[in-house]
Length: 321
Image (cartoon, rainbow, N blue to C red; front, top):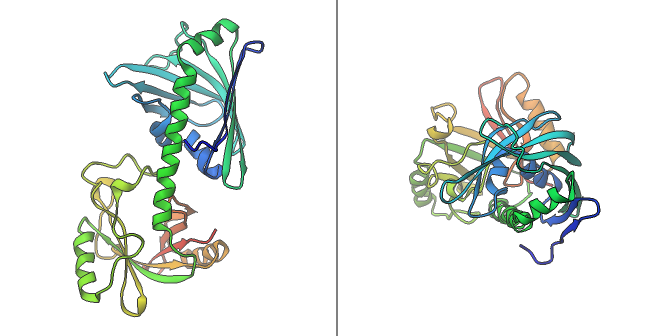
């Protein structure tokens, strides 16, 4: 954890509450996602050496998150969080409890009421947490179980996840200058192809060389990376004739992709602004088929892809803030 980040943990026995105030070096949307998307919560919520595994999650008022924490000896603790109030990117609250595999609340342990409030200041997000208990005895029981130590470790896990994510973003994001590139998809032999292209054009890979799927900490839109995929190419860039940029990636069948002639090449546009990116995307995709709507991606871009009404594949990849 960055020692300059605020971390305040206070137990108030007069009101039967725990107050936690914690800063994270990431923007509000990023931190909100980390607290509300199951595939991200699974990466950090459990204190080491435990890990979190979500069984189901319905993040809405009246919905709940059902998960378990699995220990190094395969010991298992089931929990659920019932959501009461959600104001997106501002606050969410609800009841947390130990339960069984079917979600039935365990009455031997106290329930806690969480209110998590989010605020942002210059790309540092603060999460203010108030955890309330029905009685002092309930509060003291949770404290005695080591809640402070365990929750502190979990928050440090989130620090590590943020650091890994932004390291990868910094390596992959280069310039906000507008450009046109050619993007190639391969069924698993991107590295072989780009080593060949490099020998022909006698240039060198940019953005730190070949990036692999195994370097990717997490993706909100994909399941965990399979071991057979981790060494495949996530992204590579090679300047060719007239400094035109040739980019490429593997499109693994394990992740649901099928590479065929026709979908293995895209024209990739990098507009100078998000407004221009949206204008081009909306105009070019009219009458065509959108494969991915414009959205913020983990590498720091505003990205979308589609096939236009003439069957030509396009990507819009805006790196401007």
